[in-house]
Amino acid sequence: MSDTPKQTHADEPHGLNVSGKLNWLRAGVLGANDGIVSTAGLVVGVAGATADQHTILLAGLAGIAAGALSMAGGEYTSVSTQRDTERALLQLELHELRTMPEEEERELAQFYELKGLSPHLAAQVARELTEKDALRAHAEVELGIDPDQLTSPWHAAWASLIAFTAGALLPLLAILFFPPAARVPATGGAVALALALTGWVSARLGSAPPGRAAARNVGVGLLTMLVTYAVGLVSGTAFG
Image 1 (cartoon, rainbow, N blue to C red):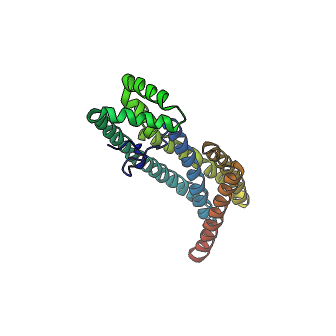
Image 2: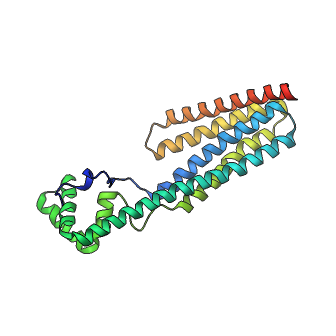
Image 3: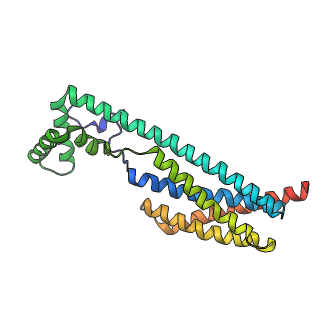
């Protein structure tokens, strides 16, 4: 086995940044954002075609149910695949530790050298960590994985479902509790504020500029509402 760290192996994506604690937060923020945008577009589009409150309510509830289940299912499938990948990487690392322990310890020392430790200290750290828990030491340094904190597909699915539903209720309630003449502007204002908040939170989670993310979020949401309202208005006129 080469003394070069496994970063050169195409089949082992070392440095994979996996954070179980942030995973469900990310799913929740994205779920809320999608719930706001998709439901706002749906109810505003229906409001453009008809002023019947019962019809708007039924369309909104159907959209919330379908969207929430779709988001939860998508998150569960996606995160399950990620978890399977993490487990496969851990199994590969365990196999290498069993079949070539000396090479693996030397490789671990090289990773610590890359982090700035002297060769002597890096070798000592690698030896002590290997004696304590070799798999954990390699998993954390090479893969960015905590073996005890693998990503949970159920956490992501539930966070996405609940957040989508919570986000979707905002435009539905806004459009139902205002008179017909004020429905669309009131819903647009409520949606803009909510999207600004989710854009800011998502940017903070990703260490990105919050102002730009919030503005982009609001722009996409308002454009969606404008297009769907126009479609509903045209459809209502043509088929009403």
